[in-house]
Length: 222
Image 1 (cartoon, helix red, strand yellow):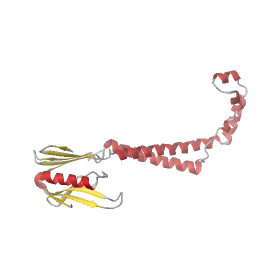
Image 2: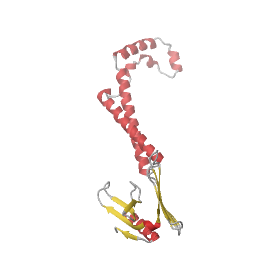
Image 3: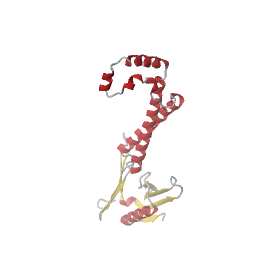
Image 4: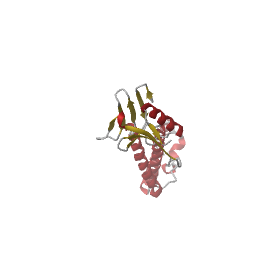
């Protein structure tokens, strides 16, 4: 909140909340893990094919004829020539259907994370509420999605303000709604709090009372 005697501005965080950074990162890491597991199961299923076994046998036959000193230069042991490529430990997950499902869910998670990161980059819902007594105007600014509504910039006069209304709906963690509305003439109401921006009841009451005192209007809902 930026305050002085004539201008008061309330910043709205929007999508650049710490919780969004956290969940976008967790979803991205989980999606990458699912994709890698699915891709590994696909590659391992190909390694177990008869064609690859025949190829690996021919490679092993060639390896036995290599000079041992050359293998030592590469840092390998003498037993390397006796190791079959088919003895490499493989994932116990088969590609169909487990690996295929993991690739599917990993792709969905990656797309969801990518969309989430775009929202954070665009800062959708972020902006500020500015109340300017010096010029007698109220400015409501929000960032939107790219396009015609990328910038939402609304102006109202202080004379149009009738009151400040607080709406408190108690419920579960995800159902609780605590919103401050700017009530204008003509029964028009503008929400001043950000979407998904958790504020305690004490913070809502403090911000609403300060704003009502600053605008010298009545406070409803408390």
